[in-house]
Image (cartoon, rainbow, N blue to C red; front, side, top):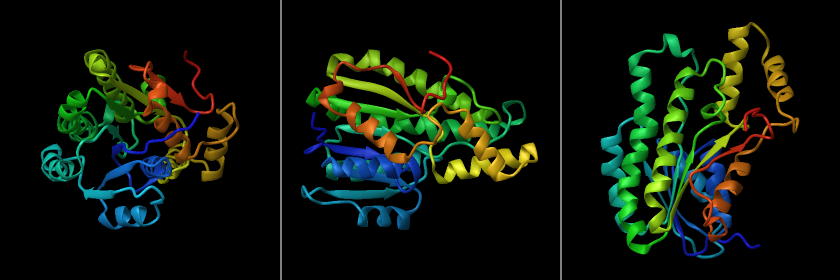
Length: 262
């Protein structure tokens, strides 16, 4: 089996760091053209400078903020026009701040839904016409294992991840007749900057050291280790090929066996 994305163009969100960056790296190695989104123009330029061009790929970026869906639409639509058609949409952006759901403010919830569900809908509206016209498309939402098994002290995140997963399931049924698949990848504990931040936050909340909390989390993973951003990239690359043409509407955990749910 040869995982090739030659001739495909993917829009990847949150691509300057962490999971998004890992997906961009894997997709570039598989031959895809890339349109990368993130808030930091400097970080995006740095990512692109390190991507391979063995197949003459085209790389471009848009510095934008998912917290402002209308601005996102305005900035991204122009780039999409220049690179269309976009055949693969990877919905991914930074997660909400930690904290309990009961004490989160309305503003925190609104920002989370803007950054995730509403901005993802904006990007869907931009790429969907071409996917339908070409009778082929892949939409992949990067959510979290918190969508299936809520994680402690991540109340807003658990809430919005569940909403995005439900949205993806609905889209999968609506779009399958156009040969468009929609799937949700649920990362577990992945070694990213956000993971370091969450470990520090949880350690402070519990009154323990960073090393103790890192050990606590690792003990919960049957594989005994945390994943890498590229692990999510490999999964997304497979789901973006015709090998996965009969897979749609699923929540796929990539978590080293962490989840206890079916």
